[in-house]
Length: 388
Ligand code: SAH
Image (cartoon, rainbow, N blue to C red; front, side, top):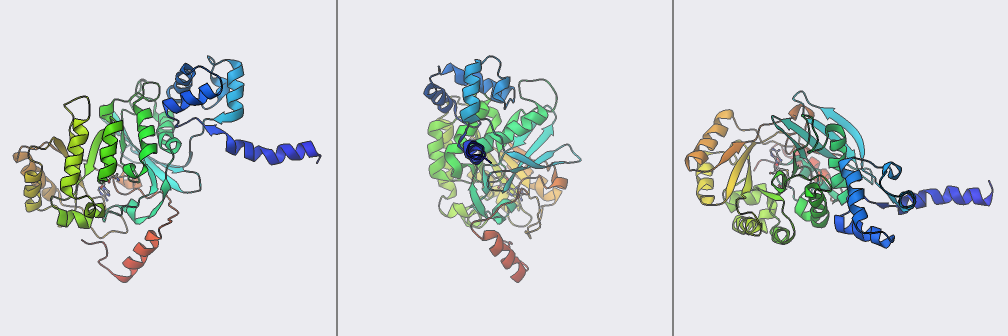
C-alpha cells in the first residue's frame, strides 16, 4: 500500500466521526451552522424541510439547494438517525421499535394507532435514574441521556414508516408523548430541542397541544421549562399523599406533591393560551393506591386544580410483584373521581403482547449504576421485593 492510500484508509473513519449531525439541531443552531459556512440563514429552513418533511438523509437529493453547497455539506455534515435493531408489531396494531443508539445500548419507541389519531411514545434517556417502584425502565438502571438527534430520530424512524401529520394516510403520527424510557426533565436541553422540532412547522409541525412531556416531578427543571417551552404537560402523581408517593416515586422525597402541583400550575400560567390543563397520570396498583379512600383523598387534592386525570391500570412485568387492579376497582376509582366533578379517562392497555405498554419498556441498557444487578439480587433474596 502506498502512502496516499494509507492516508485515505486511516482518515476515513476519523472524517466520518467529525461530521456534524444536522438531525436534531435546533433551528437556531442550524442557522448558525449555515452562516458559519458563509450561507444565508434561510437555508436552514430549506434543509429542515428536506430532513423532516421529506425524510431525506442524502444531501444530493436536495434539489433546491445549490450544488456547491450540497457538496460542501456532504463533506462536513450528515443526517444520521439512530439504527433500528428490531421491530415488533402487536395484534392490536401497536408497533414497537428497539432503537440502537451510539455505544450499543437500545431504547424503545412505540406507535399506538387509535381511531382518528396515532400516538408516538418517545424515550428520552437510556434507562432511568429515578427508580419508581412500579416501572420496569427504572429496574434497568441508568446509562446516559439521549442526544437530541436520538430523540427526534425516533420520530424520524416512525415517520418513515407511517407518514407525517400533515400527509394523508390513516396511520399517521398525530401526537407525540415523551413517555418512553427515561425522565425527560433530567435531559433538559436535548428534550427541549427535540420537542421544539416536533412542534416547529419546518420540522414536524405537530400542535403544542399534541406534544406532551411527562415528568415524575423534577420541580426545579419544570420551573425552568415554563420559561422556554410550550409543550403540554403531564405529571406522574400516582398517589394522593406524600407518605405513599414517597414509596412509589422516590423523587417525591425531594420535591413533594404540593411543590409539584404548584410548579405545574405555574407552568400553565406561563403559557400563552389560557385553556390548557395538566394531565395527571395515576397508575392504579392493586391494593396499593387503588382503594376508595385513595380516590376520595385524590378528589380533595385536585379539587379546583386545572387538570384531567388519566388512570393507568398497572402493567405487570417480570421483576415486579405488584398486581393490576380488577376492572371493578378501576371503575370504582373512576366513579368516585367523576362524581367529585373531576375529568377522568382510563388509559387502555395497548401492545402488551409485545411489551409495549406503559412501564414495560426496557430496551437494552448497559447500566452504569449497577441498579439492575441490585434489583436482581434483592429479588433472589426476598420473595416480596417490590411490594410497597
Ligand atoms: N419519566 C416520565 C415518563 C415515564 S412513562 C414520568 O415519570 O412521567 C409514562 C407513565 O407511565 C408514567 O406516568 C409512569 O409512571 C407510568 N408507568 C410506569 N410504569 C408503569 C407500569 N408498569 N404500569 C403502568 N404505568 C406505568
